[in-house]
Image 1 (cartoon, rainbow, N blue to C red):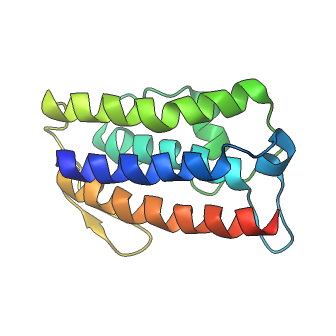
Image 2 (cartoon, rainbow, N blue to C red; image 1 turned 120 degrees about the vertical axis):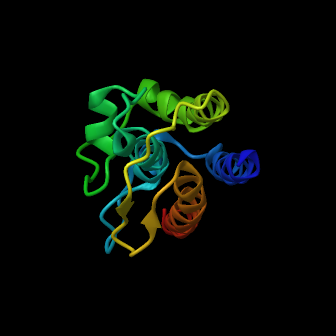
Length: 151
């Protein structure tokens, strides 16, 4: 499953390369017809990963509860983000994957709780979760690409 994590990492590195020249205002801008912005999509990747791999397995998440609430599924940006928040999201995009890989290698996900995503995808193992995250991250990468064209 290290390949799945590596695939996720490559997508996130690509997303970071697409936004490196964007200002705080552009990262926080919600265009008409959208309910979120580029930064929310990036933060959501981290929050979703923590929810799918940790919270759904009865494990403590690494991210702060405030981060979870701001970027969890169903949330929306409430304000323009500042430099510190943007730096944290960028940092967590990659560091959270390293923690996930380390925890996977250590066998931390030994008691999975089966569930079904809102897309009808059944998650019964951590391997299922990692395969789902590749799809989920890809979908949000598409949103980021669309948002970048609009801002």
